[in-house]
Every structure is written in C-alpha cells, then in structure tokens.
Length: 102
Image (cartoon, one colour):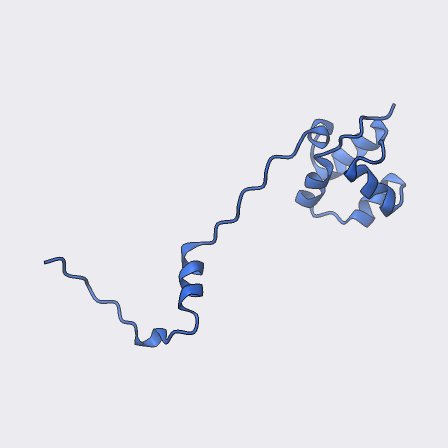
C-alpha cells in the first residue's frame, strides 16, 4: 500500500543521519533519482520501504510523514562576532585595564 505523497520529513531525517543518498537508495532498491522523487513528493513510497528507511535513519514512519520543524537560525558565538569585527585591526595594541566608574 503506497503512502501519501507527503514524506516531508524524509529529507530532514536523512540530513540528520548523515547517510548518503546513494547508500539509502541502494538499500531500498531504487535509483538515486527515484529516492529524490520520494523526498520531493513526486513519487509515492510503499509502506515496507518507509519502515525500512525509518529504521535505517533512526526515526519513525511518523517522523518521515511529518512536516519538519523549522531549523533554528544560526547565531554565531559572541567571540566569533568580536573576532570578525576586529579582523584587520592590530589587536596586540589593545590592553585590558580596569574601567573606573568614578
């Protein structure tokens, strides 16, 4: 029985797992092109393949069917921001001294 064309969580699960598309496609017996069509929703997947993929990706079939959560926006660490701001400056000339609030 084919699942609906909405395997919206499949791509996110694959990216989280770090498993290459070529390896997943080979393991479920489809071409790489066919696998990408599963991810895009232009090809329907049978339940047995979905269960096998979920097991390989370390998730559930529900995870594959669910809309992936929005990825958190990357916020650079403060030290990275400071380093980028000081790039090109002679930081050897900067000395930390206590600030007096008198």
